[in-house]
Length: 612
Image (cartoon, rainbow, N blue to C red; front, side):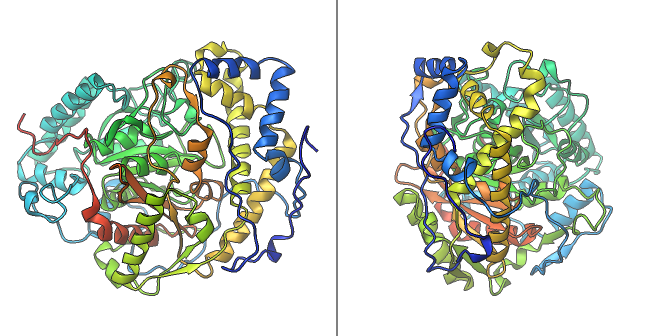
């Protein structure tokens, strides 16, 4: 039993746990009592944790207070460990889909996806008359908007690229810190090549000339991949594009630069002492979220309709929700991890941030990995989004105690979205119990931290810790304290949760939750140079994101409105393995039901209709 620990939990066999709405399973809200720590206190805590003996004692107390000993380390768990969240092939019946032909190129898959979309929106110049457009609310320009404008000669990729570079410079002057690096000459070269293809009537795909930001956790030439640090780019050479980046390049996308991120993905705020803290375009005085905050902010501000992120613990979906855009993480194995920093092998993968669900579908079609033989991965279904309204007998699982463990505004908006889905489509919400939520969060934290420590060991063992941000140094100290028993017990909890979720998906098409427990919180000046430890807000941000990563399930967040302060709120849908098409259908329905609730960000750029 761990030092100072209370009696450890003894788990009953997973098959004996009641998953029904009347279950007596106890819901544990995150046990967080620690005050916010920033500035000099962060430095002091980092120094203490890195001090032999004293650091071990402090970490033992912290692990006790956060129930790590009781719920994970010393617990008695009957299930065997499950070390990966990969899912075997299953023939999942999905409604209103088109089966993509095997062997298609990324550009061909994009064209297949475009054929699945609803009727075209009005021309951009006529958007002022569109319900939900700028006259009555807010409309983001999409991949199809840019493609149509390029094809008609209304504008060119080169003209849009110049506007992008001017907007990126303005964002830098505003200290929005969306990008770590942006090579203007490389952006213009790509855009001019795309312009020539349109002039010749031969664009590669609907994504030709469309700007895409890439999180600095994915390899993208000609940039180094720093992972939000100042040292990793030199220690690890970037020799080729990541697989997802290469697929987008093959579609003609203009890769706009490396988006900022929380250092080493080790935080939820997006505060980065090396490259600047990404600010939320809806309120630059608030966080954009992490760790893919730069990608989310760039889409939110109109700098690109699509961005790539990486999601190891909600790192795509959390900032998407805070910034009011779509965040999509497919099933583990759907996208290649080639060229992604291996910060956490079994929980992390690339993900998509997009202006709309339609754009998320287009990007997904471009980057999906079809290189594996079919016994390991089912064939690709694309949702016929023009047929979403005819989706029948959809059942959404809701765990009331968990769903309601969020702010009043978030509960209200997410609940209203579910009622609208029932009124519009007849879809039912069924009450269930998702057991051991806090136990899963802690098991995921142990897993992620252990894998990060192992991944970075060859660098960290031979470098000066002063090159690392203070808050991340604290995180690495915690990660390094986990034992083999901690890790094994975490994998036993993963095995239980896989069983629970398989049972729930026998009765429901998706699990529905808020995406975060709070909206974007204030960015404090004392944290800009040191980072911060805001455990209360951090726990609220990750409250609903863990199953997608720990269990490798597909998950998506869609904006459903704004709180009373005008900050975005996201609703999350978590689906069965390999059910991306169904999940995109459900997300599209949420988007349509809540479209008129969108408000424009305070920092936003119109790259399509700008006159300069």
